[in-house]
Image (cartoon, rainbow, N blue to C red):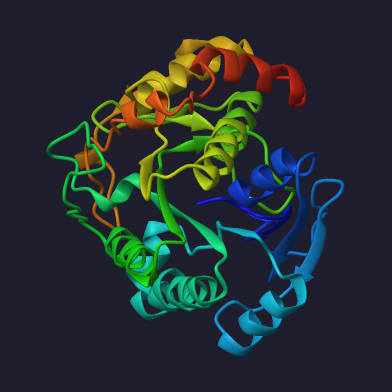
Length: 300
């Protein structure tokens, strides 16, 4: 689907992924980012709009005001434990909002890119390709899988991109797995990391580039996994090496040793060969970590 103009609307712009999409897009698009709870500085050049996406009338008014040519839907209730504790809130944020946006975008001919997750899979048959059936094991994964169908079923303007574990820089309000790890290491603490949970992590900048590229392509469903399958522990090893910490600060543990509110799939590595064939290639893991080590506050 061709995108006729240069107006981009990013939902959840104060979150980690949305912030990175705005930062990557401002040189090519007129970017408007939605925020709800967090009044934070967005990347320079981004226009901020406060809106409650759970209110359909506000969504319609927003689209009338911005008149986007492309919408990248990053907003979500993404904490699996929070979704498990309050399934109704998860459904409102992850399914109902997506259904409203998908219907409005389809009616207006607006390209919609929906950010889904590798957690739509059960972790028993990795690596997962786009054609593999979804089989989530927790509320968050079930609701994201349902939201995917809202997007794909609304019409030909919708695209679903499944994303892996993300790391990197974000807004002051957004959570970042890497920031939390580095702060613990800086304080001399130790990280307990699963040696039996596997993902295909990628940095936020590569994920944002992938989403923007997917918007211009013909694929309706795309995996944007990172370049390597790693356990949480192995990812920690790569982090301490890039940032100059000691591997003695890393402690191995297993999923069964840590109580969890939401079930955790053991291996949701994504098969992203289709994206690679389309020219969507993430940065090598170590390269991304070294860049972030140079950009973030001193690691010592």
